[in-house]
Amino acid sequence: MSLRYLTAGETHGPQLTAIIEGLPSNLTLDFEELNFQLHRRQKGHGRGRRMQIEKDTAKIVGGVRHGKTTGAPVALVVENNDWKHWTSVMNIEPIEGGDEEKRRVHRPRPGHADLNGGLKYNLKDLRNVLERSSARETAARVAVGAMARQLLAEFGIKVAGQVIRIGEVQAPANQLSVDELIERTEESPVRVVDKETEEKMIAHIDQVKAEGDSIGGIVECIIEGVPVGLGSHVQWDRKLDGRIAQAVVSINAFKGCEIGIGFEASKLRGSKVHDEIMYAEDKGFYRASNRAGGFEGGMTTGEQIVVRGVMKPIPTLYKPLRSVDIDTKEAFTAQVERSDSCAVPAASVVMEHVVAWEVAKAFLEKFGGDSIEEIRANLNAYLEQVGQY
Image (cartoon, rainbow, N blue to C red; front, side):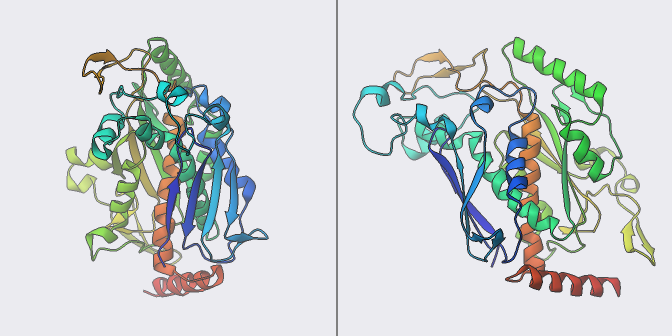
């Protein structure tokens, strides 16, 4: 069975809910680690007041017993602590006028899903669109990805992330190990390893916020320890790099994805792009470099997976953009719904978990079994086969 999930819930509703199907039995879960990953998503310089309200924790309500998965669907819940202030506005029961009518949204915000969603679903209250299209939903995706991350860790696969750019400030390249990268980015409010760059990014975010504007950036995810051969070349929708790219661009406000050297390859000659193949008795086949970011032909090469995503600036500004009222058709300046000036560091965490999910899904497709023990036996047999090639 393929690994899959669904999420439900609104940004000001009582909770976010996720159901995961396809996790094997006997996966030991670390609940503190799960909630640690949710906490990481809420950190970062440039976040607004909402992050002071919400202290996310995940509650598992199905599919786990005595700390281990049972093979049944796993259901988890992330409660919204701000729900108490929205009980009448977001009540599921029908109500007439009053506070409901006052909080109706009829002025679409540029850069959001408001107008498109209202037109598509024929909704005259755009709150019915913005409540679901909000980046709040990424809390559920991080919780789901954190489960996948623990599955990968069971087989020695590590996931790290870092911020590469915020606005005009670019971080210098580094050659840190994955363990060092995890440790040092966790100490940084903008998730970079270079202290001088960190100071510049913080100052840049503060300047942009003071100007009533917002700012985006580039984030990178690295996954180490992935065996060769995840994904496939035989059909377009089985190529793992393509599936990762789709998942990355599905994150709120992400507008692009590159793997390895990505767009840089467009201005280089082939001799500077492709990775030479090497062989050593103690490690088998490997690449002399990793410009391809861990992929050739839609399959993993055994090198690190390196993925970058581009996040646009958050579109809700204190220096509002122009829009049109859907009732009166008159122009207005857009209202403010949230106050983040920069969510790039948090987006780095979200991307880690989105990519981890896709890798875990491909891992189970390749080594699938109903229990951790069966998967381990399948993996070991495959690694022995590859070693004898």
